[in-house]
Image (cartoon, rainbow, N blue to C red; front, side, top):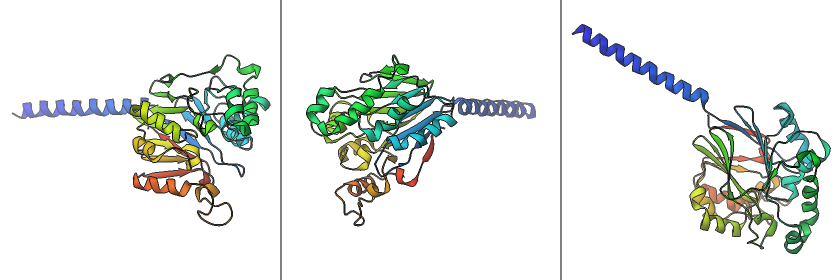
Length: 301
């Protein structure tokens, strides 16, 4: 009897050791990222995300204005000095100015730039006030050292960053929306890290929100969402309900967060405070806001 109990004890101990070993190996080999939401370095709103994977890959989403370039370069140079994947949402300078500066004035290697560029003719027709901004990033992308490294993505395309990290193209502009033109040309990206996900909306507007709901609803649910158009007058409440995020990333400076352009809280023309109320309805656990400085989150660990 004692011998039998002893055998059972040994078997149970071996099973426990095997389970602990499996869990340990899984956690050791698990991919994760450190995502930094970059802060604004001028009076302008901006959007920039610096992402480093556990195996040393560097990803940038947008990057911010020319005034944000130095801060972004510091992150790049401290983490290997090159960028493996640079994802752009759209041509507006508060998203592309830093990249234009880096291309024009540094030798930082960039392996791949993922960007769906609209035609100059459409910008001229539907958003002529932003034509000079379009020309800045378009001109920078002609730089000889990145020729052959620019990828025009397609809807549904995956970029495999590492074994358990990928970026999926959820939506691109298809010459189908002319209202709020530049913002609605935003490419929508979904970054997947193991079983966690981050949705980048860029400056997605009302019309693009409806397109996403009509055509790509199954791809929308995400743990983290980047708030469209800096958290004001961008995506719709219906879209955020479908995304149903636990955490929100706000590329939003202090003045825009409080809708205060000099006369006090919520006295400006922006809708940030209204959007903040939406997220209370959705029971969002945490808001990470650009106004609070560079914020680094570990996701997937």
